[in-house]
Length: 213
Ligand code: FE
Image 1 (cartoon, rainbow, N blue to C red):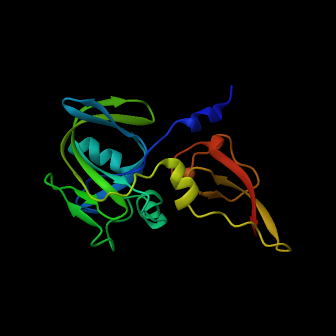
Image 2 (cartoon, helix red, strand yellow):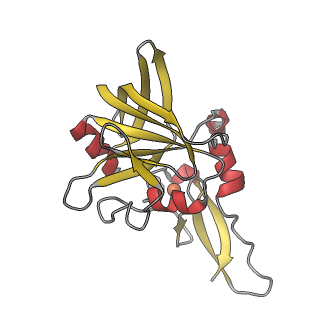
């Protein structure tokens, strides 16, 4: 049995946005790779969100969200902004002026590095332990651009910066790198129950690498 067969599944990439708590921020969002249409009449989509994401709680509370579909035009900064920090501590829209707009439901959607947005109202929530699945009816949607949607594979090969090999002669150290988001665990041994603080993937998704010390 090869667990890596899971990597053969294809995924898109999306910015999930929701109304903020009004204290830390007005709006917040995170990156997800699990949005898909589940019925066409009515037009419903499903999303699956890790409960440790701040945006998860916001969607659960407000019952509505927007999905911005990330395109091949997106740069790595978009992933850093929405994926590599938490909305609990930061306003993810600070300094992002001109790169988002507000849809009819009052929520924001991202207009740079994206090709479409969907607004949806939650109809069902399914508790899946680590994640919640939200089944939601699409209430509004529009095209932003005609660039192709970015797949997860495209992100890995074209958007995520390549780790440089250490320069010959430089002192190196052994660390563990998350193959999903690039987070570095600084230490020679990775605890088996380790969970990536950024993307929440487990130890199985880490690889041992040598980097410059
Ligand atoms: Fe990660």
